[in-house]
Length: 594
Image (cartoon, rainbow, N blue to C red; front, side, top):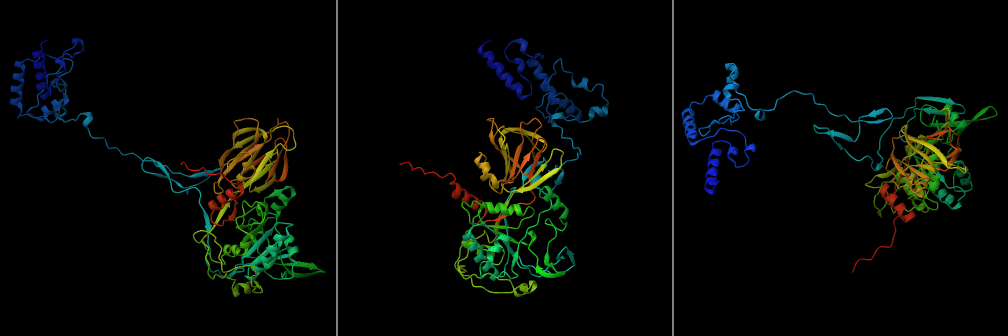
């Protein structure tokens, strides 16, 4: 084919394309790859143009339908040319041959240009809930947004807990007066105002801390604060002449067993004697009667667990753990004052003790920043003193500087750390409850005095977790993550993170590493029947109990955390303790490049 012929065919192809005629039949190439199409000559083109001009003005809707069915565009104009059909495609006349006139005249769009069908469907939406051991609640922080069930969070899972004091009035009501044994108490007694009570726990056999406690008690009584002391501290206070032990504002504190906690006979007696009025049994005791020669002599009843509005621990971290052990149920806020060797959990100094107590009880305004101005503490009113029959004596503090306010709290609120505890129970092989404790730091199961490795089968929500073959295993709270768990290679966890840490002690395998579980799971470990020896379990280093074959330990989050008061907030106090006590990530800083 010559060059002139190729130019002619190209021009002819462009002209055919303008009329909507395909030109792939004229492309040079192998004949086997070309579609069959009738040959179009110049005479055929003249006949086509004449036919198009004749019928352009009288094109009916049936012609338009026929053109649509044949594949030509629906917008037929004068330049539109009906194409000759290939032999393998039926013509439009053949398509409509067997159709009725109504069906042939009905206008139908091709499938690609038809509008979408509108149908009515029922739209379903997700409903989220938090479910723990069969108990589900709908108030959660996750929510579903949009029409396609996308999910997002309404806020963080945890936050800084803070409190402040508000004034409110309450009418005095005495519903019933009942008597139990030698103690007489009122049920439903609400006074218009009540005297705040502070329980002071002091590290034993420390004369220096005892002197600090004596001075603090004298000042607090002068401000009209009721002070609760245990038997040991009460005996030491009797040696100081300036302490009025006959004052109604100094009461003896005798804790009672908390129903449902303890071991052996103590556990059963607490369950049998525990009242239904509160977690601590019967409370609100007013006066007691001691029997002397068939007569009853009225004496003040000792204070109970429910009488304390605030706990002050003057000692180290061990004293804070003792307070957690005494208050196995609900716990009032604890003000930890440093008096030990390390003091990881004690951010307050002994010189700040009295003012910190007044601020915590709402008797002095909260100040987030140190200020130098007159700021006197608010004492209990005369009406408050009359309601309890207390003798108001104003004592001038000797070492309490009221001109310098303590930098305390944040945003005029008192921040507290809700320190999670573990509810631990020991079950015998027959399923009976053997003992139960609330733990602040950790639960340790080890091999005890046995020369063999401890063999334990551990489960998480009744799903097998692992088989422990090691010296032992630690179940720790975030507070206890800086104790035994950290020494065994566990992670350091912020006290506000709701989690349970599981850390092995010298496992006999390289792949067993420390794990972190959410606080809603229930962990169980038992000694299998094929174990070589028994195991031992400890709760905060105390209450050592031997686990025989078939015995198990159940560990879950306790419903009663330990609220400790922060000097600033939980993050500032925690990071300061890490740096001060452990020299956390302390290193000589590199010199800059020169």
